[in-house]
Amino acid sequence: MIKTILITGTSQGIGHALTKLLLINGYRVIGTNTTGIDNINENNYKSFALDLSNLDSITAFEKNIQIENIKIDILINNAGIGPDLDFELPEEISFKKTFDVNVTGTTLFTEQMLQHLKIGGKIINISSKMGSIDVCEKSDSVAYRMSKAALNMYTKILSNRLAGKQLVASVHPGWVRTNIAKSNINGRLSPEESAQKIFQFISSDFKTGTFWNVETEAECAW
Ligand SMILES: NC(=O)c1ccc[n+]([C@@H]2O[C@H](COP(=O)([O-])OP(=O)(O)OC[C@H]3O[C@@H](n4cnc5c(N)ncnc54)[C@H](OP(=O)(O)O)[C@@H]3O)[C@@H](O)[C@H]2O)c1
Image (cartoon, rainbow, N blue to C red; front, side, top):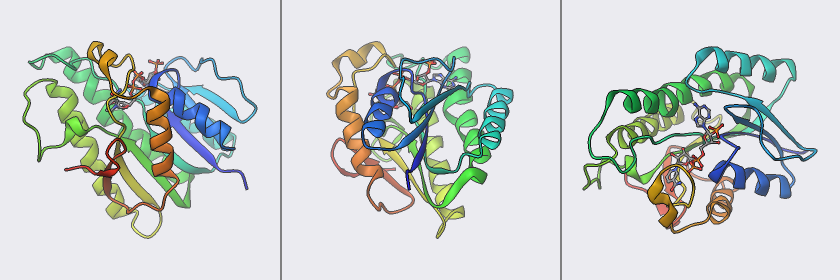
């Protein structure tokens, strides 16, 4: 039976490349971005508007999933922002925005999606090694780093709650040439290369509660 993947943030970057790869590999994909409009026109693809910083938008999205009776095999929480990436000091507006999307929105969205996730299903939180506490030696991008550390904690909590039912993992997608920050122009991977590596990971029977670096193909320090 054809598998259904729900992925957030499909309009550009890693989410866009991963959606195209999933479709080529025969999955049915439900995508989201802030406008509901992207340039993916495939039979097995449908996109909806979703603003993770707005609880009403999350609730409206959930209603669509309910109405269309969509059962999810894999949820990929890919959407994320980094307005303070490359900046040294935290500042109120970008701090709030970052946490609204990367932490609060992603968590409350996932909670609403759990009722639609199949037993045996998977949840992938696209995190970042910038959220690794153990190996952090830098002082920039405070909100972004803290938001990914918080997302990693949610991965752990959820893997405990869903043990024996569904697998949950945090994934570092590599340093990828996307528009998330100016410095990403120097990223080591194209979105397509990162998508291929993420695809390999999500296709595997990974250990639940893991934090995986797809660039090095090894566990990431928490
Ligand atoms: N690029 C890297 O090197 C790198 C490294 C480590 C981790 N990551 C993580 O990988 C994920 C994807 O990053 P990317 O580099 O591909 O970024 P990107 O190119 O900037 O794409 C971000 C995606 O998130 C969506 N999004 C932004 N704000 C949103 C909101 N409020 N509600 C819902 N969706 C929203 C965007 O939709 P719109 O276009 O509609 O705004 C877009 O589709 C992020 O979680 C990021 O933190 C990236």
